[in-house]
Image (cartoon, rainbow, N blue to C red; front, side, top):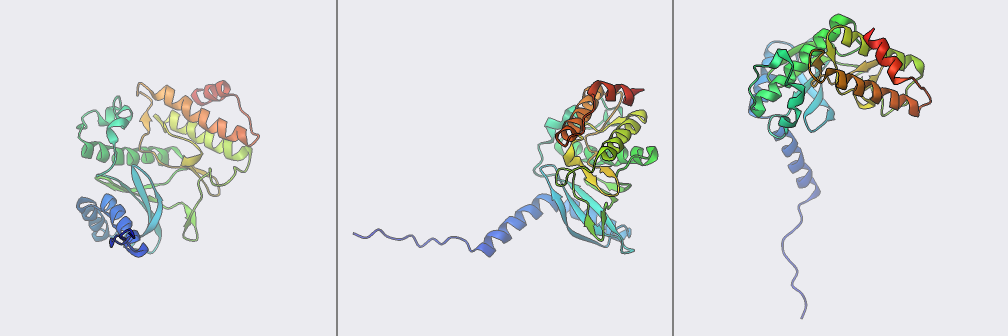
Length: 246
């Protein structure tokens, strides 16, 4: 006897793609986030969100167009899906956020404002990083780093260009440290290569008074030195750390 063929059909490719797109949009563009974006448009900060530059577990980054026609970056920290409680080590011990409630939403908002505050410190210190423009709830607007409308590639996508790139990154780490903050997550994935290397993703950055600041600093430097060592550029970790703290 022939086996009966199920009449259930697989969803068409177009239907699957639409479902996945709606899933992503619902994760990122929830009602509250849409209200923030509407506020940005009414304030004349942006006129449109163009396309995603990168997507991650904690946040999605979009290129946007400003009211004057220039490009900006809009970073949206996800409210509905991010397990932020595991990131409390970056908040505990930071006096700027000691009154933050321990609800998921409050922690997410804190990380967005943390990034904005850290970027403001970097701008004042002359660090090569995006200039902060605006922050509201889980949305951070910052300078677009790119050329002819296209974002610069992260360093893991292209090989470093030599000693000058390493020297620039280490100099920026020193400037941050001297101005009271540690990035706490620097690697080849959080550096983009333009005319110079630019350090990005400052949400987890801590003040130097944070109990884990020294450990985070050493980890940042280790990550960068390890990456450049793969490309034949070698520096001594101990000497670099002493130079940064000098």
